[in-house]
Length: 266
Image (cartoon, rainbow, N blue to C red; front, side, top):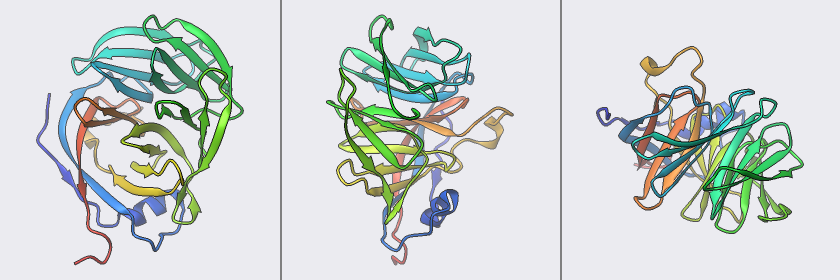
């Protein structure tokens, strides 16, 4: 199940993210991290992952694509499928999150946020949002979603009213393409679409606090023609373990982050 530990330290981390997003490198140093793979768990390659969350011993996965979008629950880490719900073929599933006894799932272009009973997966309501849906998480009292831009929207569960909108910035520039989200220890973690890097965001100011470079995580031998980008962050709070995956990736990876020296440090 596991492969040998692998460590990655990218010396040009900020420049790499800047190039991927067409944003100039910034002068203010950020915390930077490489990674070490501690464990790999097989993951169904057919899952075009758009949302990922661990709650107790259950891994929730939301998948995308028209005609293939699902809400899935696996016993974790055994990855035994416990439950699933298929979306109508005209809906493209996006981010998911469980908050108390409800699961919420975004759709991409349909402007819908679907609310489910967490035990039965029965759809309870469909809420309208005013933008595209990309990533989804919560901070314990509010739902937080991304729409592909540099903005995050905080919703009140129930009536789904927008309580506030947060502009995310890298240095003094907007950081677009925010995708799958996870709330970890008081921060918002986000995939940056097509960048193979995560960012850690201050939920009050929107400032990017740190960058995690995950380039090279998926071995070339594990790539197939339809293997897509890194997307999926799950925090196992009970074990304080960080798991990540991608769209049609055959593995879930448990990572240990490795702090990298600041530019110019001896």
